[in-house]
Length: 130
Image 1 (cartoon, one colour):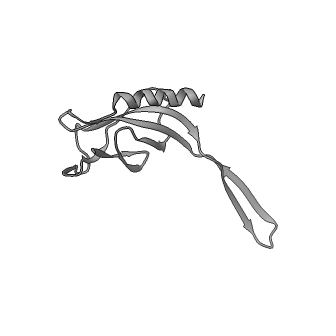
Image 2 (tube, one colour):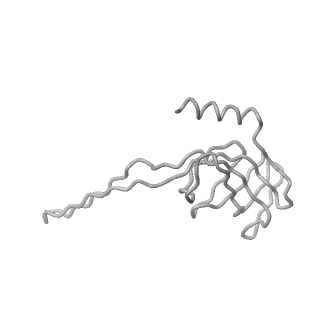
Image 3 (spheres, one colour):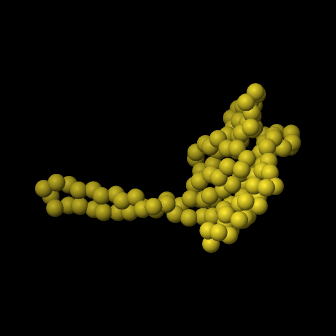
């Protein structure tokens, strides 16, 4: 099974085709739109691997944006004892759910791709959630 290591949102992720990934929010894109990750650090399979220094030029990963959203609220509560001083704050981090469709090598050939049956299953899952 082929994989790639991509960099997005200041973090690195090891991805495979048909995998659903939760990343930092991508720029104002609409659901079902195509996303390309061009910062590929490495790719390969069980037998061989190609590592960039630091990136592999020409390699890319295509994905489909499923949805944008917000995580659960994280509460920040600060209290200074015996001073009647306290502060409560909350934060909801933005995220994007993406499904990895294809992994391309540096010469443009496809290393890994989603099968047709999985595409149909994804459409059924989205319809049942709504």
